[in-house]
Amino acid sequence: HIGGGHKQHYRLIDFKRTKDGIPATVERLEYDPNRSANIALVLYADGERRYIIAPKGLKAGDAIQSGVDAPIKPGNALPMRNMPVGSTVHNVELKPGKGAQIARSAGAYVQILARDGQYVTLRLRSGEVRKVEADCRATLGEVGNAEHMLRSLGKAGANRWRGIRPTVRGVAMNPV
Image 1 (cartoon, rainbow, N blue to C red):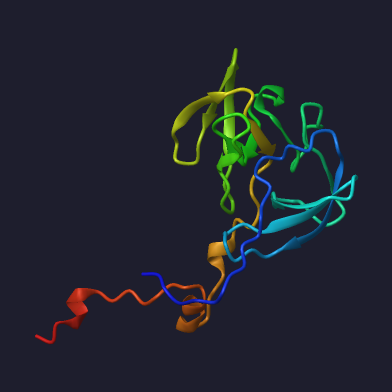
Image 2: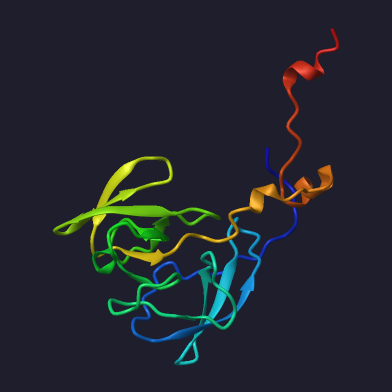
């Protein structure tokens, strides 16, 4: 049951990572009320700032890059045809250029099982094995903040702030 909750501003997240070859520096990690993952504010060499989903191990001051020639390190986004088989990735596109649609929540990741011609085979978190075009982009590493659900909320009101209303079982209402 959902309703009420604290007002949320939407943060525009860069799921496409199309600024190829321009190095970027992580300015800071931030909380985002719209998702379980944290977000990172990155400053590109040309002065543009964008938010990305913060991968595990990313910290302020780290250098990241996107594009075909980006090095193989967590936080870098490149087409999956340029990634080694066995890599753990997140923010996976289903169609080239559409933007990431798979493995975006906290702690999520996908494993690259095989590469054959224009397709790569992925194992998703659900166990599903799926083929995706090799030109689809993904970000190396897994999404950070994996322990987010272990946080003790402390009181019922904390769930209300998040917009989660009480769940009352119907059987508990019957006075008989």
